Length: 305
Image (cartoon, rainbow, N blue to C red; front, side, top):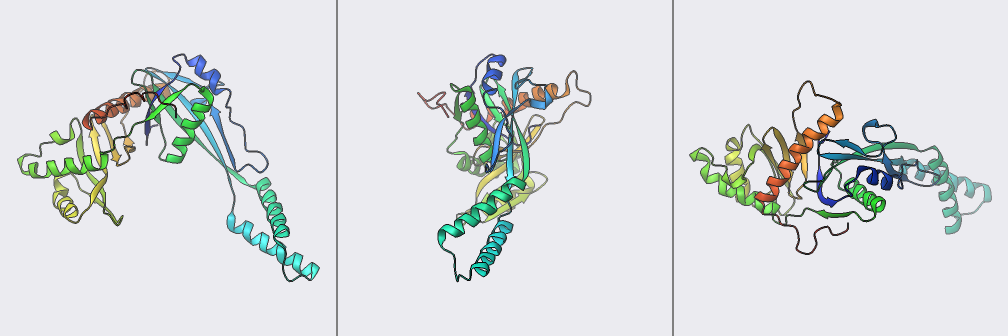
């Protein structure tokens, strides 16, 4: 359910019905005419016509994003063909700019009418007690689109990106602090409540990428030391927190989240999964903020997105 996450602080109305009424003002409508795409809110997890799904401890919201697939190469080829046909028919050596634009617009309109539409549903989860808004996507563009749509629908909703300016250096620094302790049974105090896994991705100033995968972080010690000596810094790192595993990126996003589930959930399956996964994600985010000494900007708490 939550495989990747962009996490924000947000202030949403406390009443689910109020949120539903706001979201109903930005419904999903298929792209029309020359529109390249569209987006709008749809019932989460097929919950009838209700635009807000409630689970223990939070709510779920879904945004559908439609995109028309426009084959640029096919459009270009058709434009060239029609330009050539016009030249042959008129005996002209070349067309003026206006005529070329008319042909291009005509071709694009025809392709738009026949374009294949791809659809993506983005699930977002809100935990009122912590004010964490979790957008379950790996795409920054889609996450930004989702929060913008929420702000447009709710109007008074305020969001805040959780920025930890020293995440990259923080992870690198913590690795440097940890490495000398490997021989003393690998004291993990540098990582607070987290247990690093054996997966570390690093880059250098030339943006060369290096991925180290080992059974444990200690097993990758020599490779990590060598990379650091060559000027590499950490861009993402595998972490374990309780039963949850994930990769923390240098932009403070969570990737490859894995949270095991009970085999026989009680009650509605999606509600059970959402409650369980959000419990874990909220715990992870609270401990990450504590590890990196994150503080909400003074005087900017709840700044509008």
